[in-house]
Amino acid sequence: MSEVWQRLDAPNYYRATKKYDLSFPRLTETLDVDTVIIGGGFSGINTALELAEKGLTNTVVLEARMLGYGGAGRNGGQVMAGIGHDLNAVAKHVGKDGMKMLFEISNLGAGILRGRAERYGIDADVRRGYGYLAYNQRQAATLRAWEKEFRTAEPGEDIQLLEGDEIASILGSKVYAAALKHMGGGQVNSLNLLLGEAKALASYGARIFENSPVVEVTYGDRITVRTEDGSVRASKLLWAADSFLRNLEPEIYGKTINTYSFQVATAPLPEAVIDRLSPIRGAFSDISPVINYFRVTNENRLLFGSATRWAEYFPDDFAAWNRKLMLDVFPYLADAEIEYAWGGPMACSANLFPQIGTLPGRPNAFYVQGYSGFGVTPSHIVCKVLAEGMSEGSARYDLMSSIPHARILGKDALRPALLTGAKTWHQLSGFFNGRN
Image 1 (cartoon, one colour):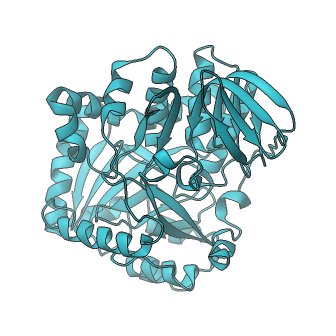
Image 2 (tube, rainbow, N blue to C red; image 1 turned 90 degrees about the vertical axis):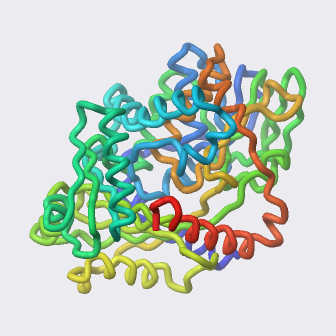
């Protein structure tokens, strides 16, 4: 596995385009605070920032490596609608009124994200323009239904179903039967967004520590979190380590399983190629059970990513593997140079819906995890709701935290087999829900 991580940790697009030269100290002292958060990704930083905006600033965030080492510094940067892969997966747990509430909040993410960037002047290449893509008429029918739902949720937004030659107005590819243009979605440089949010958090007086891996947590009315060289005592704790939890808290570790996605970024492409590739310079994803996703960056690169579709395995060569998928969509990029290739883990829940709540019998120990590869935008919704639960409480938090989280047995010993079975089922079920 160490060889795999050497490849996953290869230089990537996000580190190469980092605009914030931020660094935070290692924890080497003993602190007493109101809230301690374990994890310096979107979940940890966003929840802390939401609390700070409520006036709750006596917070410490502990990051084992560096901010954005996890998904925030490895993902596709897609700003999409929704809060989980499929709201219907939790319908039986929340009822009709609960589904209405989830639908109402599921489209808030892009607005929260853009509003935060504007409020704090974060330079994160936030740009509008998204396309959901259908390979066939079954998927096109799904997009027609989504068009109605999106227009109902956002009546003032530019949302339009495109078919046949109309697709060329947003995307230069011949492989799709339909595209749903949604100008309310778009893209962001996720690492720069995270770092900008961390800078904003620090301005409130909250403290952030990097290179401070947690080694022990002792629960009680006051929770003690011990790192290698220091400790924090707090009234409340948030576990926000997601795919990097590594069994530090067995109660929640057993409720997600890690799969991996792999991405590439081309060298900057000529303006004429970009004009052909996407006139709106947008972000896109198909709607298959396991998606391809890609976007045109501010530097005129194409960033392209995916995950294995049926069997769980690590490609021998990330760049070559993704390049083949990229050329299936854009054969005219055959001469494009791949400048960066990287990957990373995604913590998936059994129902592919994010998990929040408190540990059993520990009402002051909160957690958030399980975005299932769909975290950039939903994390900004989920963490707003989570911060409500950690402060004044809310009906939204009560609803989301009431959804049960299934334990995944054998997740370590049987990981490849479990994921291969899950992906196979996910692909086959796509025939029945218009996603394949």
